[in-house]
Length: 382
Ligand SMILES: Nc1ncnc2c1ncn2[C@@H]1O[C@H](COP(=O)(O)OP(=O)(O)OP(=O)(O)O)[C@@H](O)[C@H]1O
Image (cartoon, rainbow, N blue to C red; front, side):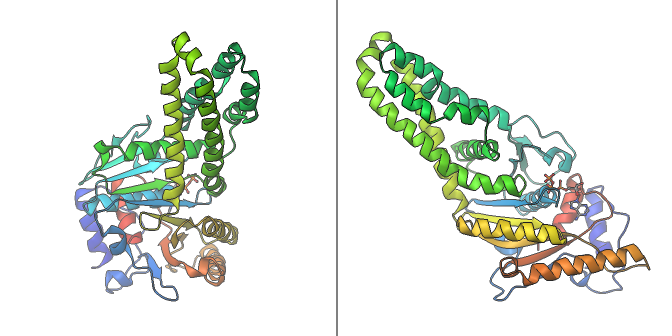
């Protein structure tokens, strides 16, 4: 199909018309230079969108990479395409600096599932509010392992145990959370949410994750938190037997059990997050990058870390590639050469070179709103 026909088809129901559409000289659309190219890798093991869309079991796609490379745009375009292919889909932002609302050009904030307007098929968005999620965690842990419990324990003459709890530094962790902590809590909250029966019909969950550094720290965080919370739970058990008589005497048993239960739930969710990240049947992490040397190196480090953590990665999107020359623009020529150098580095990189690479063009208009995302999805996800 000629690119002009595709534009007409997309623009008929939606109002998105980029200004710059390079001519296609009568060639089939799939040969158009503006069309995202899938650069095949050695074994051609990874197939395209057909494989991503097939199957009715739930799949999670996590898009991550350096800041500003187009993670949100690519994630939103993927979610639109999944929805239009019949998958009830949720697109989730766990980046503390959300841009999903900007990408869809509508208000998706509030920390709850919001239907995306202008879609032909159901698509929901969720911008997780990390502050709110953190507060929930703080409330549960403080009541159970923080000052509330400590005071209570001292009151019972169990000061030594209280000091041991203090060594866990859980409160310090909450007051000065390490980078990635917010996101870990946010993802765990999403897990609780999407695993509830009411949302079981959603078969594709697309995550727009925070920039690289956060993602890397996030990967090791569930283990750390799991260990911390695990220790806390053990102490809780010791405490429970030592003080059960006192607690019932003071009438606090129900509240204690309730808090303990909440903390245990959080711990379980953390373990689920960790397992989900490593499950190649359910999850794929897709790295988004741009054709610059700096971005290539950062992506290579990200991939090495993801592999070390056992996270399944098969695809790399190289976004914002300049379309072929349509004029004698000197600047464009230089930029194109520069991009080619970076593309060469990507291809020869021992880590990145093993991935199936999807090249996505640099558009001459900003990709915002459903019609634009739909158009981008048509080019990118094939
Ligand atoms: N292929 C493209 N062509 C033109 N503009 C693009 C392209 N991809 C993304 N952009 C634009 O680049 C900007 C950043 O994109 P986006 O928000 O998707 O990046 P991000 O990686 O999610 O950023 P952040 O790390 O800040 O969350 C946006 O203005 C977006 O419209």
